[in-house]
Image 1 (spheres, one colour):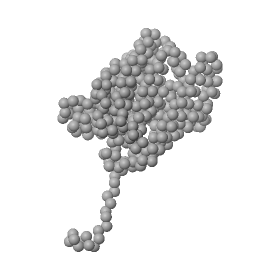
Image 2: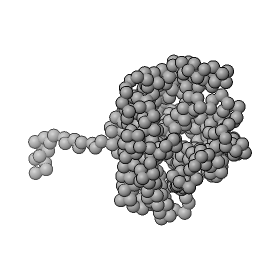
Image 3: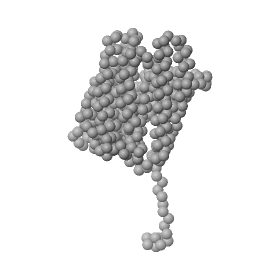
Image 4: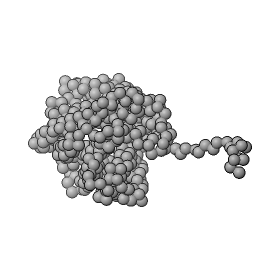
Length: 434
């Protein structure tokens, strides 16, 4: 659903007169796309996968299945009501990724609180002494996000530039402390599990965890370099963005060294290619994000389509590919149904090639757009020069959308119940039974 809306919004760049209906306008569809894939797809996929990790690594049962279902209902209700409001033009103003009005987001926050309590009590009642590193990341991610939602929606400091600072904090923490931190926790369980070997280094995992907590929490203002915000505040964000090299290099090394010796399984596995792409993009996308924070790169790329490419490299290339790898690993074990290998391959390659076309076109076009602005050319010229790049964006997005339909079929195939086959009984067997 989220991709369908994003696909339609992307096509409007190529055919801006596709429709003239207010609730299908780009300004309304864009937040529907982002909020659906953020809160509807990635968030619930992460939480669902984490329920298995939390119970498995604690060697105990989930604290409350009933509360888990309540949280699931709140999450879905929040996304449904939020999207209806957005398409009707009811929103929270210009706050990117926090367009849902506060009563709607309150439902999501309640689901987060219930989930955190469920996870925390499950880990607290664990049957083993250690708390596995995955649970560090997962519980920390939930803690930060509950705080984040409160800070983002409390009205006391939302006037003028204060709102801008809060927006940068919320926007980047939403990606970094919710999606990235949570997904890394999943990788620390599902990657070693899929390879049937332990994580390469527990110490590297701990180092990555604490440096993630330190550096990621103060980088939001790098979205507002050259803005009227205090220069020192922008500099702090840039310095901490550079500091993100430490957890990124640490985590990437840990994951690649865990894969070492298993490269021959890549061609035979439908799980490892997803993890490999996710880990590589984790390094490339996060490093690129740190480089984009510097003033000389902001000068060219700020406010251009380059940033759209970067956000898809991270939220799609890292988070979504990791989630797919986790799902393809665990679901066949739970349901005893393997997905068709050829369809998993089609899903992987169409998603990967589509993302690549999407990223490269917008990075190239965004760079040319930024240089056009620096040279002082009229704004309309930068719009015209983007036309071929927006076409490739639509082509890449179409491939990604088709890959998601294939994934949906694969998911259905894995979870549908087997029909028991009754073998015909011969007359001879009937006599024996009698």
